[in-house]
Length: 145
Image (cartoon, rainbow, N blue to C red; front, side):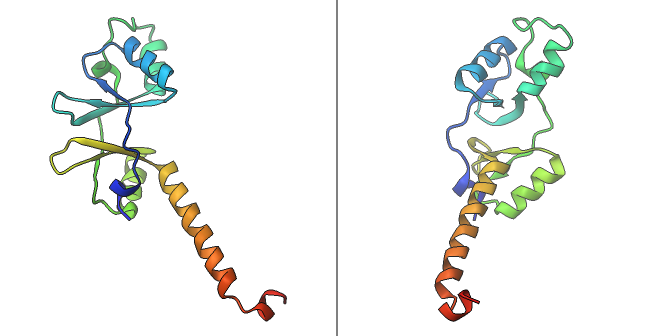
């Protein structure tokens, strides 16, 4: 299974030069805690989280209208391609100590967002399917012991 197959394709985004006030309002209206920050070519260059806003703006009493997204976003960004196997994406998340990875196409443009929750939902579904198969294949006499 690949990252591109299970990632969310509707991704909430921000631009590097917009104010954190505008970005925070978008997060609030969309009820999300993360925005993928894109450059002009629609390539991911950072992530802005509600934690970034709390620690890098509110805690420092910075002006949210004057502070730009590029000043407070997390820049050490890992991405995965659409063809990246889920196992490799999980490894990248663990190494990068993150719960979400932007998914990019062959040109580096954003096509989706993969989260640990997406992967867990997939695994839960697959384990349920395996459980059903095992119950169907178990001889009735063994199931009653």
